[in-house]
Image (cartoon, rainbow, N blue to C red):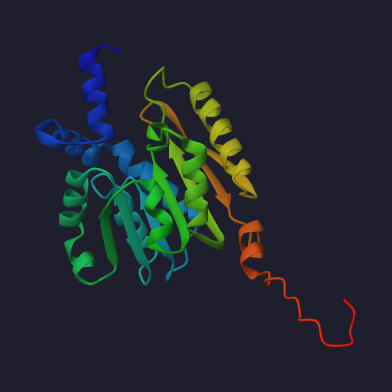
Length: 229
């Protein structure tokens, strides 16, 4: 990839400056982005009062989809680009003022510090995670038992064929399974002449994390006179 193409591609990873504003505008109006975010949220089948986290909010399309799906819930969004947090805050200013939406600047790894969620989702940010298995594990830590994690990916680099989406889906599903999700389901959708994939995994209602937290500490009663231990 040439230096110019790399710089332009990086604007979609971390939008900044005038080009970052342009990247945000493109993301906000591209039909496939709108469709992809709504599709991802629909697959989570949210309850009206769900507590939801989006990682990598961009201009706020996914936040809007989550607000519609969970009208009585609470939606939190995190993005490492302050420009995108500002854009999404303007887009959803009324919901922010009402306390229904909370948007913060940060990486996916801060998710557990934001509380527990019934659902967490991301759209086209998985490819930017430098250590995807570790990030997925952190996101699962932020899920309530029985909660769901959805990761959507639409291959842009290396061709838009179904094969690229299938390869990405297999890798994401493996990373989710290794992190403890079960079951893990994979979905596909045609967008902009390219195939998108969404992998959805569920944190078990009782897993090793919960068991360790609930187990009482070992207790040893002191020896009494005349009693041999």
